[in-house]
Amino acid sequence: SDLFPSHDMGRRGMGSTDFALNILQKTGVVVTPGNAFGVGGEGYVRISLIADCDRLGEALERFRQAGICYQSDVVPVCF
Image 1 (cartoon, one colour):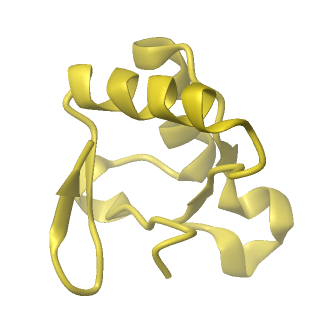
Image 2: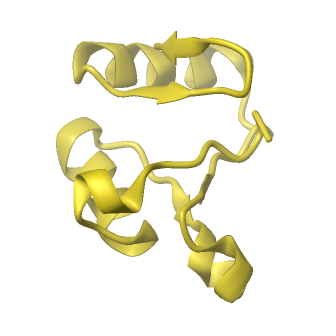
């Protein structure tokens, strides 16, 4: 599940598409809303891991600067 971070839609009051747009507006980083892959994907976003390491590092730094975190199955992760 760590490759597909989930978000608590009830607490945030937004679906996957709105959540992805919010990330884009705050960071300039594009993530794909999970509902683009069907109803079962709602509540998740997908992050492409095929970019080079420097580019991924920049995206994670932007997440960190924006205060974007997620709760993994094991431990909270703040970028």
